[in-house]
Length: 110
Image (cartoon, rainbow, N blue to C red; front, side, top):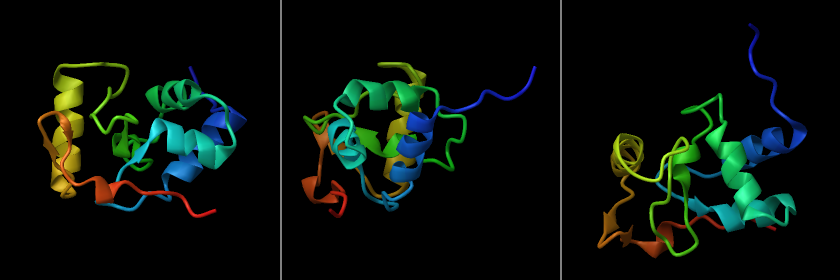
């Protein structure tokens, strides 16, 4: 079996995500807007299939309400705990289930 090929859309998602600096996060919606895509959910599905993690840092994408969101196809449990640890190692913290410092949300340049 060979490696899974990524679609053009997935490739664009992964390339845009690499613009998010360490210590920052973005949202599924902001990432979709950056790509000119109509669906934040499609972005989430592309991230779920990310074969390049952690080099392509899908752990840096959170929900629009600034809650953690899922990770690697899981909504809770060990995978989401790993996402929390990875973000904490970059200084991105959550308090009461929400991003502690909303200023850490990266907004793509126009």
